[in-house]
Length: 578
Image 1 (cartoon, rainbow, N blue to C red):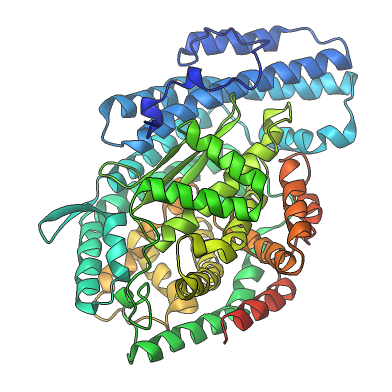
Image 2 (image 1 turned 180 degrees about the vertical axis):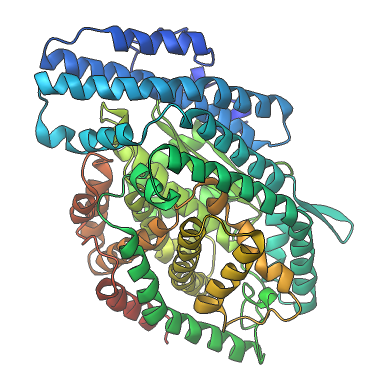
């Protein structure tokens, strides 16, 4: 039987990518003294040539990868079972004891690298992206922020714990929120409403707790920005996320372009939905059900069917991808089923030393689960494609392109959903996917706009934050749903967006990447072989090129203005028959 989580898997049994050359094989990387000594070795090393500088970088990369993997395994175990006390304590220990050591010493290593490179210059093209990021990290670093960043991580863990503990007793059975969400696809409207109200009631029970948690996060983040010399956290975060190729103003122009170009298409989708359902207005529990009253799509009954089905679909896209996915399954690097105590959402996490991807989802047998695994599979294929770069930093692309890898895979998989469905249901799933694409572009504008407001107005109250959320929601989606009598549920709806809590300012990436994915989808429809070739070529570059060059390698232009949005959305609208 395959291990279902990394709690049951011995990492040492995973095949090593290569033998360690610098880090001792038995080094205990959860011991701050051991970690400090290893980094101190690098700090004290003499560098007297270009070759020695490159060796310094490779040894640092090996150590960073080993520690990163140690932290990743601890994080995975914690999210796989948030109510596991031992796993939670291990995560807290690593966050409090190891993260501060690494963060502090990393700054000294960055400075050593730049000082050494002045004497022994490295090849400009190869190290351009790395050099730029190092300079940015040095500019942001201050010792005063280390305890604050540790506190922020622990607050993020608290969000995971609160969310993971949310269950509902529905019709005599305890269900997780992902299991409850599946009921929102049921044709019985009264059942959907009951399920939606049960979910919302459970979320409201923790609404005050989550608001207070966010206030703590906000306070910590504001102080982090001040300590680093920034007027606001937004500007600090843009630099920390290496956003060298676009500005906050570009993001706001995206918001405006979406309002002008995409929101009207979403309006057509919603008008058609209401008409087909025979409703004067749509309520929140009418948004996920099939508009023609057909039973919800049920692609699989168990995790084995889920895995086997996606394996076949990936094989239809490209045989090499199927081999890669099957190896992940064989090695037990998938934790896919929803269960009590499991953190919400889905993610892919690369184990940097063995250079293998791990995928986490909360599958309950829905069509959405198929899209989620296709998405996370795209991330996994990205990690595998860039596996051979010796620098750990280059084995991860900018997020804006990481999401191109995942979102493109969702679209590439659409023609092959017959693995799970008959022809009619395949068409239904494709329509759902394209409609979700439109909704996502709008959601990105809405959530990114909200985050800009939060950090541009750091002294706001909780009441003002709720009112601003309602205002922004009204601008982008207010005409499409009737929330009468659900005012409290509506004003706290942003609580379910884990990115706002855990990964601030991570959302515009989805909009940028979705446009790139739509561009690759157009290529795929015209010439599948060429599209897959471009996709693999760009993925293989990892993070070794600037963002515009990664898009160019995929045959795309890095642009998220109305000029790019309009023709792509016209194509989506045609496919949807609007």
